[in-house]
Image 1 (cartoon, rainbow, N blue to C red):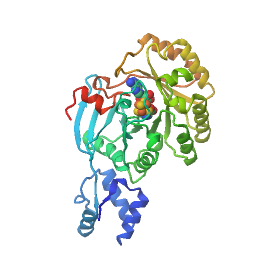
Image 2: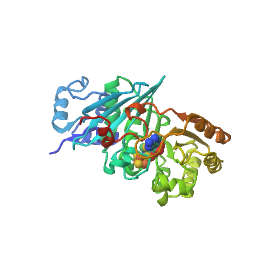
Image 3: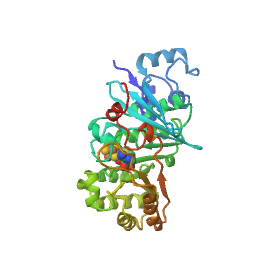
Image 4: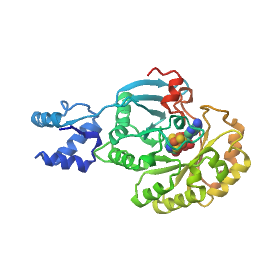
Length: 348
Ligand code: SAH
Ligand code: SF4
């Protein structure tokens, strides 16, 4: 009989399983508090659970933990990157980004990524596999154990395209959001997508409450298809239509991420096109300076970035410039790739 992996169960699944063992369903709440509030990795410490039931749990279930392969601290910020080893030998990364009171945990959704954006290090790995629910949930718990800090914000912006691992990512987020889980409010959780239109539509139908961020990176089809091949399958008009539908239904502001790459998408004309494209959409825009990973591209200079931000100011949207925290340790956006980090000095 294979053991139950507790961190892969929703609250309902756990209470059903507990009932099937002849126990009372309130045990589910107790177990979750130990797993998620106390972040316990062993049954022995669950002091309000009888020794007898602890033994049953030990026989029939287990608490999955992610072994740490390596942590890297940024020299220029407090950002810290964690490399975890999965049971099958693959590695994934998560990033801890403290900024004042805000403690953001950035987690991965897949090993590698199939989307193939030309500017992204993860794309170089190709797609290896989807992460399981417990592997997604445990990234947050493991970082919490290592930092001793509870996340205030959670972003699914690490390795992988979360909407291509939709069911597992959503189930994991609901576990983390649950009152007896980690209780991270849905307004503090953001899922970032490269724009998988049919799954955005499903996300809208399923009425998930988490924030959506869309990696736009260009405001015309030619430029976008050149750097994000997924745009040929789901071009801008279909993406914007889906985003508008989402904004209308959820009444939330959508975040658009725009990686500025010198000479590719950073001209005043590009900024005006972006202004046109997004006018009328309640949104936030995150301008991110490109983190060089390979190839001929570089980041624009600060003056150019500020000029770009100035042009899109009339969107009446908060425009934020992401300072790419942690890029000295390849923990910044698009630099999360275990094959790439191998080459940056990891000894796996
Ligand atoms: N697959 C999802 C989430 C992971 S990528 C997505 O694409 O949205 C998270 C963010 O990192 C995206 O906004 C992406 O555009 C950005 N990114 C990727 N490579 C980058 C790089 N080299 N420099 C800066 N940002 C990058
Ligand atoms: Fe995948 Fe996102 Fe990287 Fe594109 S930017 S290759 S979707 S991880």
